[in-house]
Length: 381
Ligand SMILES: *Cc1c(COP(=O)(O)O)cnc(C)c1O
Image 1 (cartoon, rainbow, N blue to C red):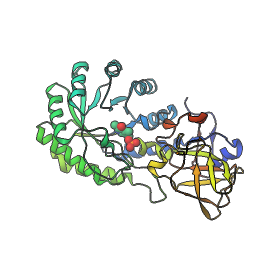
Image 2 (image 1 turned 90 degrees about the vertical axis):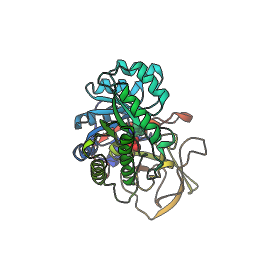
Image 3 (image 1 turned 180 degrees about the vertical axis):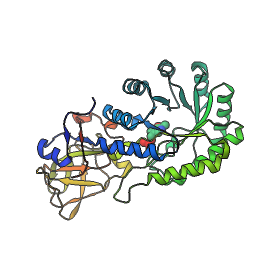
Image 4 (image 1 turned 30 degrees about the vertical axis):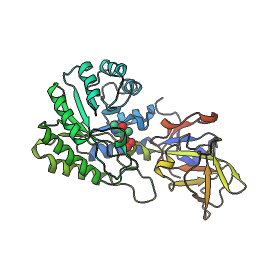
């Protein structure tokens, strides 16, 4: 796809000129590249991007242009996508459960970095993956809070099992590494502290030196009107704790942000289809579309309402029930949203911070789900 031909100034210009009836995702490449450079400059190790958070080709191309050289992939589709758009990039196949057909596909594509969290899946890798220059990272988990929801519920070995897996990885001749994910939208940096210290303990107990430690995604995005997350503070904590915990045996660090990289580079323009009897707002997008994550993440206070003339609605807020367009009663945004009292049918509701887990989760349920993606210089105004 590449850069779209028209580069808009901002959302209100799109609204004035196009009055779009379908939801529109607006990406600002300047914001995305600035975030990528912030990671590259600040993170004390290799920065990779978790493709699942937003696999749009324009997003991948802008990350490559900004200097991102590695990608966390989870499926043959994502492997092929990155091989096509960034042929020289490193692929980290960090979905710890794979079918044998998927393993064969990845071996053929030259994947050299894998993760694992169980003996049965490690058996498959040992049987099918050539050892030369190949890294296997053992994924472990802790029962720590701090994130929006618990990633450990699906993946990750206990520290005990992780030690056994690490020993087997090394004995089989692979490069032994460790990896974890503190949970998405992790606003408590102390989660990284606990995970990194546990990683060092796993290595000591197993008598294995980990070559790399991948500290996951989980870097928070700006979800609410409260202060934007201070990524640099998290980077500094990771750097300090890695040295304290590992000393001279400090592994090379890797991170794989999804949300923290892309969320704030994209906003979503939706339209008010109806204001039913002055009570309920019906939007043309909802939880089966690009707003799929809203009930989980509660990103409900970085919202602006713009009139078809491109003017910001600014009357005192009124608490409204907001529904999506489908006929399912689940298709409702959480609680009540404070929306300007002068909101009218045909207005546009703009949600900030919508780059992650939006387009990728959009469905065609009930015949809705047509979404355009465009580029703009700015996401506000
Ligand atoms: C989803 C995922 C990520 C990205 O997580 P974010 O919370 O979006 O940063 C990173 N690593 C792995 C293995 C994942 O599955």
